[in-house]
Image (cartoon, rainbow, N blue to C red; front, side, top):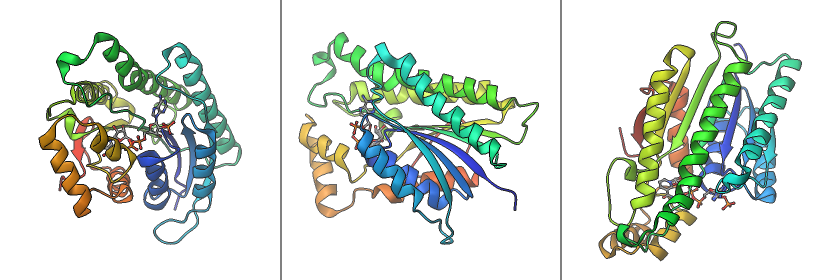
Length: 283
Ligand SMILES: NC(=O)c1ccc[n+]([C@@H]2O[C@H](COP(=O)([O-])OP(=O)(O)OC[C@H]3O[C@@H](n4cnc5c(N)ncnc54)[C@H](OP(=O)(O)O)[C@@H]3O)[C@@H](O)[C@H]2O)c1
């Protein structure tokens, strides 16, 4: 079988769902080699995840050749350093592409997981949200997302022009939410940000369909993790709070690894409609 060497960029890879995506990618993607660019603010967390990944095995218990770099101190909420952050991320990706070519194991697929995200203040309803709150929130959750996605497309297509590398696949994933497609009280900024991200990748799917590019908006379900603990601590809507408390107490929140496995298997099967929105609970 020919080598399947994937270049995988994950934002917010130091913990939570980002780390889980990276682990599931090694296990379930079917790649024989994975070169990771792990992006985040916390160097120690990123280093730990990378070293764990290097010792992973896949579902057939085969060792997967994992290489990678961490790009730390990337604060995606700080637009004043966004150009520099994007340049550092893509320099790291370029270096891994060069190493792959030199070791005769060229990259066959490039994947960007736009995972990093924040909740905003769920104590507030929209009439309490200021435009300054909105601007801060969208800088991180939308503006940096656009920058990451567009730079990734440009850099990847420059490295693998379609006429010379027709087999090379490019995939952009948005870690989305049910809120992108259904409104709930107190989630104004979060829902607006996720809807914007979904729609951008819908547009990209159309613009790039001739270039072997696919996009996917994946809603991972209510995850049993720190972000959910923050939801239970801060959400101002009583009715929803009771639902989340109840799920937590009954143990029915979604395990991160179950959700990230579903995502990676969707990518591996490659039957999803580009630009669409798929939820963990979908068939
Ligand atoms: N948890 C859920 O139930 C749930 C449900 C639906 C969708 N999602 C989505 O899943 C994605 C991952 O969330 P999670 O559940 O893993 O949440 P989390 O545990 O709060 O992790 C968020 C990640 O984003 C990073 N991050 C936060 N602010 C950042 C910044 N300014 N610059 C760069 N990175 C930053 C965090 O890094 P630090 O360690 O540096 O803070 C962390 O790696 C998010 O997009 C979220 O909206 C989550």
